[in-house]
Length: 162
Image (cartoon, rainbow, N blue to C red; front, side, top):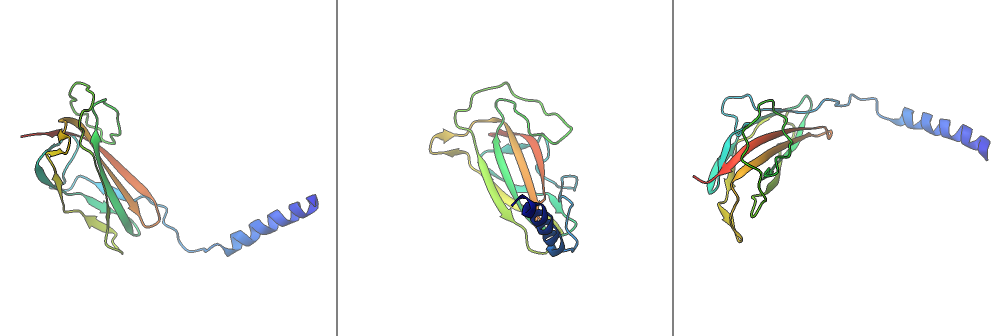
């Protein structure tokens, strides 16, 4: 039985390697570009409760874009996801009472190698518990291409009432 393993396993690996498609595979991550004029939000920006903002950013990929997501969550404990060089001033640490949370996925039109978002996002002022907590938040952007490669941007923002 042992001799069969020594013959069978290399034979199986040979068959698998021959049967794999030799086509070109995408091995490059997509890119999130916040340097375009009008990009919003960028690191250290402020969003306001009870208002709408336009999420504007450029996504690019060498082959084909897939989808993106936005995750906004509190940073009252000063944890870090930041991918930006610029450090923002932080409010004192605090415990959340009614923190705002926003997590949403979005598709990108098929065949796109470049896509500029122009997404209107409503930030409510409160929920059934009451007004949301003001302070330090993270605005986390995740971009995935059709092959499954992903890129992320972690921005530090403030969320306030006017």
